[in-house]
Image 1 (cartoon, rainbow, N blue to C red):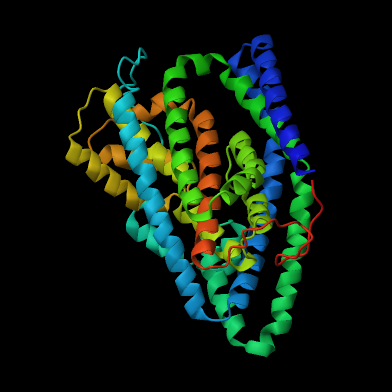
Image 2: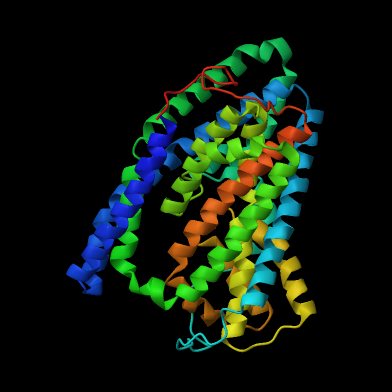
Amino acid sequence: MRSRLTTFILIGMVLGIIVGYLCSITWPDPQTDKAIAGYIGLITDLFLRLIKMIIAPLVFSTLVVGIAHMGDTASVGRIGGKALLWFVGASFVSLLIGLIMVSLLRPGDDLNLPLPDAGASTNLKAASLSLKEFVTHLVPKSAIEAMANNEILQIVVFSIFFGVALASLGPKGKLLAEGFEQVADVMLRVTGYIMNFAPLAVFAAMAAIITTQGLGVLITYGKFMLEFYLSLAILWCVLALAGYALMGRQMTRMLSLIKEPFLLAFSTASSEAAYPKTLRQLEVFGVPNRITSFVLPMGYSFNLDGSMMYCTFAAIFIAQAYNIPLTLGQQFTMLLLLMVTSKGMAGVPRASLVVISATLSTFNIPEAGLLLIIGIDQFLDMGRSATNVLGNSIATAAVAKWEGQLTLEDQSLDKGIGVTPVPAE
């Protein structure tokens, strides 16, 4: 049954490209195209709204139940520490691969495109990415506000306090913990219903973007996009090899399980859209609910591997386009700077572009260079989002393995892995 959803998503992608191309050649006027794409995109917008609707209660309920089952703060601290250790390592590797690949491939040389005026404005604000703002942003002013805005990191912080307090109540908190477990069951059942609309949302997403951008943009920026996706593929291989080193041949099974959320994130350019399905598939793989519900939300804030690789790749690409040489020391300094600033990406609109904008100004590279890639950012974001899903899935499984709680044997939806089974899509 799960393979049927994957097939339908792929069919939706192909049909969306065909319909989008037909719309772009039938109505070549940009304003008409934009209006048509807006109506088509309503389907995707509704799907993403449905996903956003369940994210906060799903994260909160599963995380509280997971922490309550851990039973003590030492376990929370130990698992959190291991997760952050993996996130830092993966972040460094992702940034380094982006830096190495863009330096070797040099997509900015011989671009054959008019360069934007160095003083042109991109209308991107980088102030929200300062370390002070990020640290302050960690703690919500209101738990309700955090949930209303889907601030995953703030929800995690509140859930940790709530879960630890609930666990400290001992038998008195058992009834409440069981109640939250039932809430998690309900939210996963709702997730199952929403996922049935995924192929339609994928179709609309692809049709809308091809209608406005056309297939011509893929030819114009073909070299850059090909080299970027080649770099992403190398990152995928590195992450997969790390998974194989920890989990052996079972890594193949995990990759098979997460292909649906991977494709969903790719086709909708939203890793958030794939979160509920990723959570479920990791539990099917054998990762305990208390670990998936804790590590995966953290990963969505601290472990955006695809987005981080893109930051170094795009920043150096723009420097190459303007023929601005950077020394090896400057490039390494940029990498270290991005290690810090990239952690503020969660919850910031067009986050990767905002991070790159802040980095460019630091190294006196024209911020206007972002105008070179803004037009194709949606296509690039598809790869980044899918990579984020892959990276966070492997990170969560790795932490479970380090904890000795990864059950590397065939699981099924009816074996009981912390939540009540949901119908297979």
